[in-house]
Length: 205
Image (cartoon, rainbow, N blue to C red; front, side):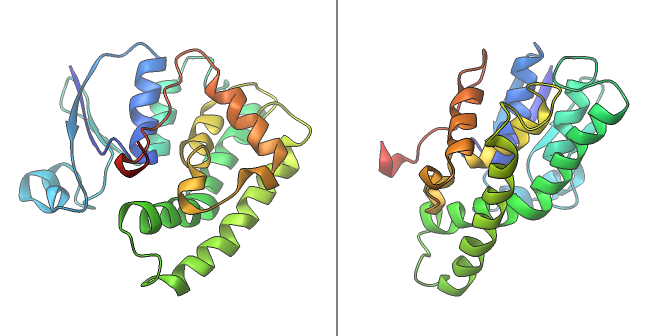
């Protein structure tokens, strides 16, 4: 059986579990906390020298890392990934952009504020996250104000990649009400069959 090493509250790890569910793959989940040393062990570094989650280990022992690469791998041959050509290129554009211009700000703000409780101690870094995260949401709004999904191919791994941290952006103090197109898209993706949102923080339960 496929094994996934990840944190249940992580958007990047959510991508791995979500695409596996959507494509009908059974898997064994190993909770792996990046903040308590789980990814610093010799055994874990043998799987991923970068010490990051998610890590997916296939039945034959093949190891996959990087959340958006994992999305693309399991989406191959399904409706979640267009065939090679312009439609696929548009999907890949969003996947690359998400990891460079979206996740480093919206996900980091969420982690520092909600999970590490470092809002005051990391005020300068969070100011940068707020500025650049808002810019990223603005880019998404430009597309989603007039379209149902991020590409003309319909729901794809581009939507899964961006949904991962956008649907919990409030945990990083981003207000989606300022981005009505994005907010409507979040609701649209959440309503797709098989989508299971990230769990809420214990403190918010």
